[in-house]
Amino acid sequence: MATLQQTASADVVELFHRYVVPNYIRFPVCLVRGEGSYVWDAEGNRYLDLFPGWGCNLLGHCPPPVVRAVQEQVASLIHVPNTWYTEAQGLWAKALSERSFGGQAFFCNSGAEANEAAIKLARLHTPPERYKIITFTGSFHGRTLAATAATAQPKYHEGLGPLLAGFVYAPFGDLPAVARLIDAETAAIMIEPVQGEGGIHLPPQGFLQCGQRPGRCVNTSRSSSVRRRSGSLRWRVIWHSCKSRLCARLPHSEPDLGCLGLCL
Image 1: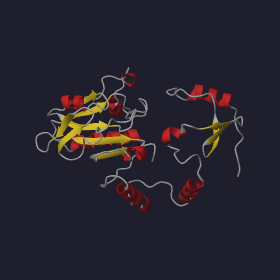
Image 2: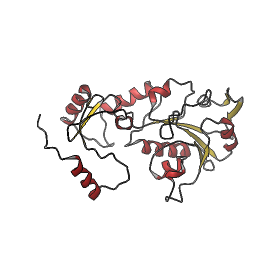
Image 3: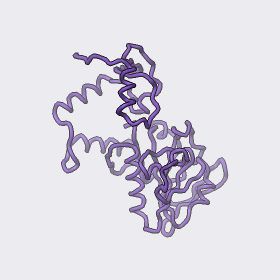
Image 4: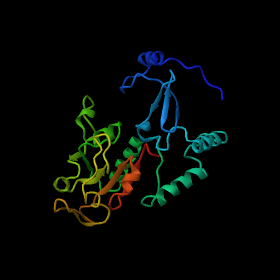
């Protein structure tokens, strides 16, 4: 296999300093190759990767079956816009539906765009006077403007105001706080079931079971309740998660919308 001559890490760092917007803090290492759980830099040093692409590389770097499938696909058809049908997209939607909560899939470019679509859908399918969306402290929903507003971490809001209106924040796992925030203007509750950006926080017992069907949902650890009503007060539940395998094992009721990003 032909390989390009490698540029030294320091030279690549300098290239970035000149031409790439520094919105991320990067390690001063230029990675050039990956295999399984290991990556190599331009100088030939090997590293054990414990943070595989923020979750994108859950199967490891360059797994042979994935490499072969990608090579075969790009040799026949690289891109098709949504004005046409492709069997692969239909089968992928079917697989997602059968392995999650049923329903249909909307494909987009990132987790942030998926969350933007979920916010739109929640507001489109509730009356216009219901526009508020409850999210939770420590959450991270993306870097687009609506997703940033949904992210209940002030450090991401600095310098970007005024943010998109309508987001209110509750402490993660605190059902009484959620109950106090719900009113006749509530359209949805948006939950990151296992928080990552805010620290690896698991939901308390009973928290995710307050969900899909109208009725009383009790947080057994706090002996309190949140009620979802049909008719005058009905809201949507949105799950946003990059940790789908772990979330699927937690006791839960089904959300109205589920968003997946990096792990796909």
